[in-house]
Image (tube, rainbow, N blue to C red):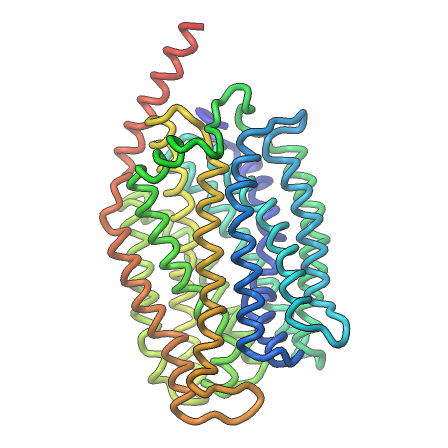
Length: 450
């Protein structure tokens, strides 16, 4: 809780639901577009447009959920009821997307994707806001987000391993993906129950003063929060840079590298294992050099690996494995450090306005993430078709080169832009401590008056 050092047990119980929340990441973002485009015959363009439309609808719900979880207190808390509802919706959507009936079209994909994304929003926005409110300390926030994101990556690793295990055992990738969806639902039910039972929330809305959703002055204050806008812009750009290789990974490995599903699963597993292993290193470095600089170093590392992908010859699995390991290690910083920086810029808003609206800020954070992922699939798939790329057959060298460039070179350019935005980010450890001291003095004065 704010002002107290959290026990490892409390942090662990808070982080546990992230395992289930992350398990669908590979199935939904990496494999689902290819399954519907290729296996179910919807085509690249139709699949990309359906998922883009679902994501854009989902963006509208983010500020509403964030505001509601800030504003409305119940006997169970502000964040907890939304997480329960969201978990049920996400489970239903996930199962429907991976168990489609015969003869489905783009409308089925879009409708159930909307339900899944809405459920994820109802869980993720209150959940991340809750984490930001667990501590006021600059470095302890990094511990909380690091634990949460490391747990997420473990969930991703397990989900990524299941298709590979299924393929090696003579089953299909889709069998493994279905198993991952079922495991996410089962584990999530237990983890969410423990979270709601054992982890306390920050003071309720009656003790904190949230800003009205449609208060123009409040929105102007958000836009005037320069560190927040700068961080949000970098997060969007970097999210697009990560989203492009995520949605194109199955296609690149199959058509660019020329390897089968059993090797593809192993490469995904190596990528995320490297991410988990690197998180403690990034957190240790951030304590010494600052979150923003260390995040930039990680993005430089990813660029240095990605830029060589178009030169990797077909069948050179060992070379591509090196790329997976290096970019996976960089992903650990992408996941652990920016959310901790986001909690710091919220403190600046509280100091300036007196309002506590972590839910709204993390909703806007989610709003930047989702268009990035939506644009990744909505741009990449139609662009490949425009270059003459086709699934299920042979492709001209120019089409394969276009796949490699969109997969690796475009993300390198985008990450360079994110580095420029983040390098001199103004909320350092020293400034965050100064902000917290002023907030603590204000709280002490307020208590003395009352």
